[in-house]
Amino acid sequence: MAFFDELKKQMSGVAAGAQKAAEIARLQRQVNLKQEEFDDLFKEIGQLYYTCHKRGEQPGEEMDGKCAKVDSLAAEIEGLKLKLDDIKQIRRCTACGSVQNNESKFCANCGAKLEERVAPTEEPEETPAEETEAPAEETSEDIVKSVFINWPEAKTEAAEESAAEEKEEAGEDAE
Image (tube, rainbow, N blue to C red):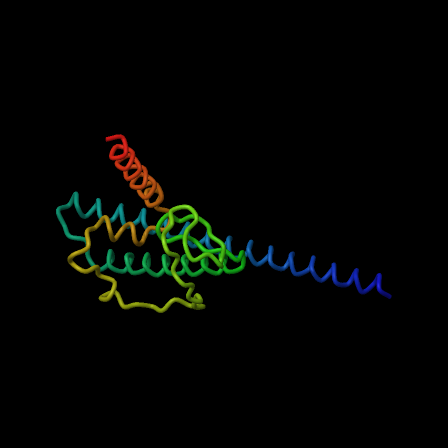
């Protein structure tokens, strides 16, 4: 009977692993679909803005609706990515984006303090279009970077800044 008990334990472990892999694949597919919708919406916003610019008009309520949808999709994508990270038992550094294990207090890549994890909500709250407008002190570049999910410069800028700091330190040491 011990043989069958051991076989049952091993099969349970295999089943749990398969279930985890299926959940990861399902969530990743959702992220990819939301990201495609996000990218298409960004393209539409750009086309709408350019058309209005060429006509000498200001974008209207249609643009506001699309921007609100972008904000909503960005929140959904972020929530799905947090769920994926929870299943994989990892988290990401907010400064450099590198993958860290859940127990880490500081990023092994850049040394930044890692934020405490907050459990992701099932459904992101809908915000009225009036609340999605950015405060006047933010630049348009800041707004786009905070919304855009696959923004490649975020990681490279942090790397460039740390490389510049290292060069400055090396220059001070040489003197």
